[in-house]
Structures are given as structure tokens and as C-alpha cells.
Image 1 (tube, rainbow, N blue to C red):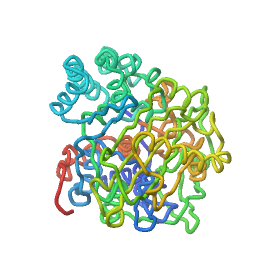
Image 2 (image 1 turned 45 degrees about the vertical axis):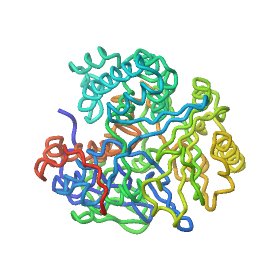
Image 3 (image 1 turned 120 degrees about the horizontal axis):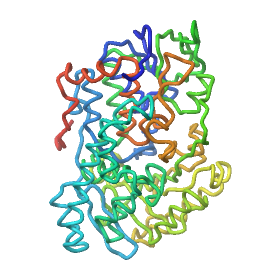
Image 4 (image 1 turned 180 degrees about the horizontal axis):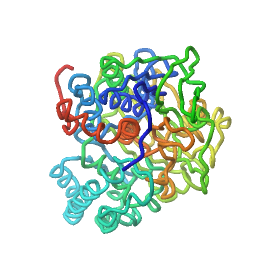
Length: 519
């Protein structure tokens, strides 16, 4: 049995209206709890925010949505489904990969389409290797999901299960790059199935092969786009929570936890009011959560943060047909790039970039005839690279360098086409309270994975639970949603959380179809 919050838990305050906090709120509501959500910003979203500039609407956080059944599961807790709140479009292809040698590959999630694309790109032997790789990714996902990702774990001993042996047999404790290399010899293809290690903050050559589960989400399970952008997801979750009876308090930052007997939290004090409660879910940034709790758990090893990113939001008067909805623009360098990002702390000398063009599927995000482009350039965090203060001067220069590089790679006239723009750097992330100036939180090293990651229960406060990317299971949209579910289960008990979907109609197990009509 996993540990749960003892005593009365009738009224729960959730601090933070990001994806994890909203998922926790929905699962708590579905289990019959009264819920108040406190959010310092004027709207829901957290990392998945939105920026409006002169008729252009930009997602300021994630731009890739995978595993939509986790959205269905959270909404099912209150008797709803994604179809009532969102219009999801499945992307075909999921990505377009462009390489330094001038070649390009459309990355499909459907097996037949991807096999044909790989065959045309790199020959029949690589196409056969892709099919074997896909089978391995599916096996890896089935072994990991319920036991190691979507589960509360109180001790490493809880992992002693036949699935651990199955994971070992699949090579999950080897190195990601080497394992992918057993299936694919073409280095360009290996990049397509291993770049996701950067999401986990670890180079592919050092990442556990188990993290290929992220490649499963990206290249097998399907990539989706919600019309209105990714910010439509927290808006939908918040709307469902409100309609199910949650009280949503925006513009209210939690500043203090009031305690009673045995150290239990009895109220949350915000900048505007005192809110009595029986339990609290802290889905705010990990340092802020620990400040509110008044303690930071002791660890043998210092916490290691993921690399950061520079993000250019550009509203343009034109676009470029060679761009997909998501385009991976790879530089020629690879291993040295990760060395720069995670060890030497230098900016990428030969950058690999993610370019997202959401107006490909939603022209309403820009004025008529205009386009939205989001360019993400990974960079070192402020622990090992330039500090937040350095980025105030460095940011504009690096912005010019990124544009020049993209123009060299074929996006002619990009700089002149920009009408509105906003640049986010580690200085911005630091101002937002993100550790080491990175929005990607803690790296998924072995010592910060599973039961070794900061736990969602904190000793010394029996009725407080953590949620979010700094705790279990980790970084990303799917894991943020799972984190909220796991936090709720610490309060309601896992049986109550698992029953919710079935009690509300079973939608938790349904993968929402792509829709093309109006919402």
C-alpha cells in the first residue's frame, strides 16, 4: 500500500493552476472533495501560458501535445470528455526533420506511412530496422507506464516487480543512443528517435534507454494540436473544474501556510485572503513550494537542472512552404552540441532548433495573411552557462544569430518578415521563479528518476502533497497531467482515483479522435 494523507481531507487547496494543478483539482473533484485553486497569474496555464501581441497569439510554453488520453482521463473525473472542451487535430506528419546535408524526412506516427518514408529516405534495411524499433518502443511503453510512470512509489523496494526484470530484459538500463543504434544505422534517423532525451535534460549518449518512452510518445502514440494553441488545454481543464464546483482564485499568490496541531496545514494565506483547508496540493515551482513548507528535504547529491532554452516568438507577414507544423532543424554537430549544453555551458556552436508554425492548422492565431513562428534554441542553464544578468545583453545578439542561421538554412528573408516578436531567455525564466533559469526543471539523471526524484510527499507535513515537473514522474505535458493525478491519489487513495473514470462513464481509457469540424 502506498502512503496517503491521514485524517480529514474534505476541502483541498491547490496552489497553482498549471497542468498538474488543474489535473489534481479535477481528480479531487471527481472523488468528492471540495477544491479551491489559487493562482498568482490572471489566468490558468502556468508554463502553458499565452502571449498576445498585436493580433498574434503565441503559446509561451509547450507546443507539442502527445498522449491525449491523459486529458480524457482528467476530464472524465468530472464527467466530461475532450470533445466538449477542445478541438484536437492529429498531425500528419508529426514532424518534419531537416538535416545539415540538405536532406529532409517527414516523421509519421502511423507505421505504414513512416516505414515508406524511411525506405525512401535511407533504404529497405533502415525501414526494417524502424519496424523493429517501433515494436521495441511499444514494449518499453507497456512495461513502464503503469509500474514506473503512472504510479506513486514510496521506496525503491516498491519497484521490485516482474516488470523491473522485463525492463532490464528490454535493455532499459543501457544507454539510449546505443540502444537506438541497434535498430538504425543511419545517423540522421538515430537523431529523430533520440533527440527527445533533451526533454529529460540528459544527452542521448548518457540517458537511460528507458527514456526512449518519450520517443514512443512523439513518434508512435501520435502528436496533436489543439485549435487555439496549447494554452487551450489549461483553459479547458480550468473550465471543467469551475463547472464541477471548484473555486478558482486568479491573481492570488500563496504567501504562507498556516499550521495547527501535529504540523498539519490548516489554511493557505494568499496576497488577498485566508483560505481554511484540510489538505494542500503545491503545484507551484519546487523552490516556492519548499519555502511555503519551511523546509527543503536533505539529499546526498546536489540537484541537477536540465538545460534551458531561448525562445523567439515571431509574428511574420509570410511563411516558408518547407516548414511543417513542427520542424526539427538539425545542425551538423551532435555529440558536441550536448556537451556544450550540459557540460561546458557554452551556446550551441552548430545549433539544432525546433520551429513550430501553429498557423499551419489554425490561421486565427494571427491576423489575416500573417503567420506565427516559434523558434526554440536549447541553451545551457544558468548553473553552468551565462547568468540571468548576462542574458539581458546576450539575448538580442543571440536572437540575431538564430535568425541569421535560419536564413542560411533556407528561410530567406525571415528577419525582414517579422512584424511582432518577443524573446524569452534564461533571464525571463529566472524572473518567473524557475530554478537555474530553465523551464525544464530537474534533469532526469538516474539519481533524479522514479523514487530518487523529489517525492510528492514531504516529511514533516502530513497533509501537503507536491505536484508538477519538479516531482514525480517528471517533465513534460503528459507527465504533468500524471503528476496531478498522483497528487490527488495521495489524498483520495489510489482506488478512488482509479474508479473515477469508470464511475463517470469510462472516458479515461478513450483516446479522443482528431476532429476537423467546428468546436
